[in-house]
Length: 388
Image (cartoon, rainbow, N blue to C red):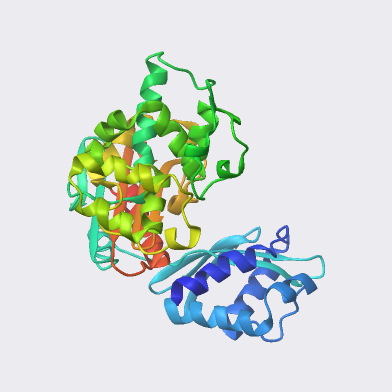
């Protein structure tokens, strides 16, 4: 329920955002009134009232206060700032119209306030049934838990594809402006947009790689996987080539329980043919969006993911979508998720400009509280950046 309500804050309220008011004192007064009284009696614009009815606004604020406790401090400049309680900090953005009415509001993910790296790491252990984490700085491991144990990482496996592709470009074997043609066999399910492109649409390697990373485009992923070959990508990820699935094949197996069980029970040498046969039909979007099927995924340890992302962290496609590290400075990021699977893999720089890789994977038979995981991971990142 908590994750759903926070998603509502991000999705519903974001539609109302306008330019921040230059009157910071007024912004602060409105925000203080909202957090202390739930918005009762506040003047709001017509558009805001339509998007967020009064009862919903009061409920969202009530949920926030119940989660973080009484607000003790508000920092606000040009409509953007932070709300703090004794145990949490929450990014906030507020906008008023020219008449001082509330026109837009967005609360970010609550982040627990932690005193040190040990406390930040301790908050990760209860995020799911299986949890692994890793923090490295240059050649030193600052924190690790199960970092060498392969867990399902969802779309974070795409780092293996990007790593191989970048190496071939550096070696002069191909070029970012090379054009590929989209085929029906590459067409997967969202995320992304290439699944809606026509057959034989021309796509450069750079565009496909950018979409694969920044938007987690699955069709772009399968297009690049087809070009590079499964064996070399599987080797890059450290997994057996027999279990190296395309995204379309993963969705197809999830859509067909009989095929999924056959794949899991089969001799490894028979698995590629079973997956390929299942993928002849377009995956069912509803069935494919269900809980993950243990064993049918990309299982990669965090030490491998950090080893993959660190040498290519300067690639622009890794820097477009900061994921859970939003607002924490220049970062390289790729993560992955499906119901029951969550991964964050980030490279950022600390105060002394040293490269830090921080990664988290959660596997669970039930739904993962992604908001809690995001908050805990952001708290970890802040402590890592501050770590002497």
